[in-house]
Structures are given as C-alpha cells and as structure tokens.
Amino acid sequence: MANKPVSRRLKRAMEEARRAFFQKFGRWPSPGDPIIFDPDVDEPTPMDPAKTRREMISTMKEAGIPGALVYAYEKTGLIVSEMNEHLISPADIAEYDAAIAEYRRLH
Image (cartoon, rainbow, N blue to C red; front, side):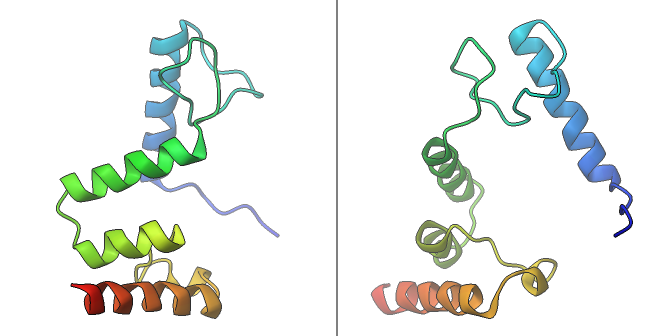
C-alpha cells in the first residue's frame, strides 16, 4: 500500500504538537515519546484516555456543539461526519444513530 501524502492541516497540527512538547519538556520529542501528552505531568506521558474524553466533552460543550452530538460522543466515543462516515463500521454508525435518537427521546 502506497503512503498517502499528509495534509497541510495534519502537518500543522503535528508541528504544533512538537512545539508544545518542546515548551513543556525543553527538548524535541524522540521517536518513543507520545505525540499527545499529559501536560500536567513532568515527564512525557501519554494522555490518559479518560481525561482526554472528559476534556473533549467539555470542549464540545464550550464550542456549542449540539447536545445530541455531544451525547452520542459520550455514549460511543465517535464523532461522525460526512468526511469520516465511510471509515466507520455500519454497527458503530447504528450505535451512534441510536444514541442520537435516545438523546432526542430524553430531551
């Protein structure tokens, strides 16, 4: 399988992550270092998935993302869009859609 070119947006995000790593730890990341690290720890440590999820939910709410989509993310861990829907299994899409329907029933 041929390597696909990296988008400008991804390149920019990776460079920002490298700079954040340098600012936090005073050195550039090595191959074994996490790309997404816990900023509250003094050594390069991968971000705790539960903490990442909590921060994502908080950010979604602050950004004004509709409640049904936040709820579906909370229930499934998925963010579904036209751009990525083809990458997600039909079973996961069904679970996501069920979470949105559940939110609407509850609200």
